[in-house]
Length: 229
Length: 305
Picture 1 (cartoon, one colour):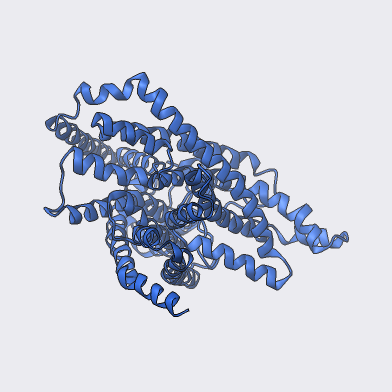
Picture 2: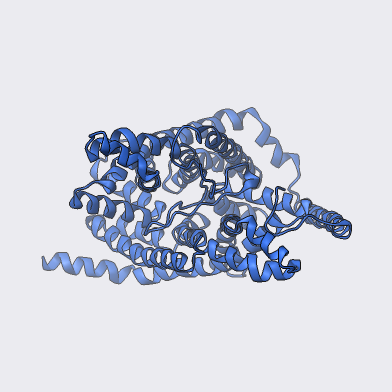
């Protein structure tokens, strides 16, 4: 029993679980920020009355949404870093990390775009007609009537994109980021096969702690802020 | 575009402005495209020594086809398994027995919170320890991980599908003397499943995309197979673009099919048929998030029968 516990202790002394999760959190934060920016631009393009912008936005979403994230991440490293010799940092590890962020952002921007657009779709046409009927010009009706309702309708889908992004940050493993949780877990188990279940258990609990509060929070927020119709 | 909440029918002045921006937008986009083409030209990426192998029969016969077969094989097994898992645990979550309900809920929430890759890597290592004599362990790990995750998502779809049926359906079953279990099995579940079919098809897109994670645990699916080819020819850019195009075409066809099905089935069930294409269709805690729009040709989430 004493051997068992001290062995387990050594495992987690060697492999720092918190550091691994911190890498996933950083990936999620930066990729989320860029995905939100790019996704918002795409959503504006897709709901604009300008046909060429709409076409580009739709094409982006349909192409990226149907591509496996693993291919995007592999492409970042094999094609952009090695074949085209692009770099986002002189240090290769940092460069991998940043390309992983770019890949995650490109992929999730398409889902952010659709989440925002579905928020706009929750606003009934009557709201816009009412705004025009009382004489509001375009900008005022968008600013005061449509967009506030659209954002509130987009919270739940945006929350599920955030959760997907958190979990997908593990796919950075395909972009040679070796310090994130799934890669660290793999190495930890490979060198300590006796503690297979224990090591997985610790990482699993970590993910539950990370994901479930975000889910509960966005569900709560979306219900609290939902426009009751 | 159909009637938009955001924009009024344009007058002559805004029509002219729209046209102007239309042309400007197209020019900016073409300029961007041209810039990418130019950069690739600078780096010598248009040379036939790089593109040639990708159009050769060797690539398609010995790399793409076996890889694609493995991808489709794992996706097919995973989909069938996930539907079974989803129906069993979805019914479990609707059971009267509290213990059964809580246990099913815990299982479903657990697997929905796990990254599929983490699960896949764990299963691969666990199988290596439990059954080292089995050859096809990465295949098993891919399939089981996909079943556990997508099955949990489907379980939520089943649950919300049953709960979103009109109350009268369940009440009618009870009033003709069926027990609650019989009502669920013979009245509510069949309608919920028909309503779910389009959502299931778009879940198949998720399964197909996630099967590419098998690359990381050395399952010889399409991506890994193509990558192996590329490392021999030093053309990962070209080869990966082809692999991505294949995935895009298959998934796009599935999405189109899902939308068609949603329209056709809407008369067959009291439930709302609709296509949800996200990474995670339902939030933990139960808020369903429909990502849908009239532009996709799908029905709007607010459509009431």
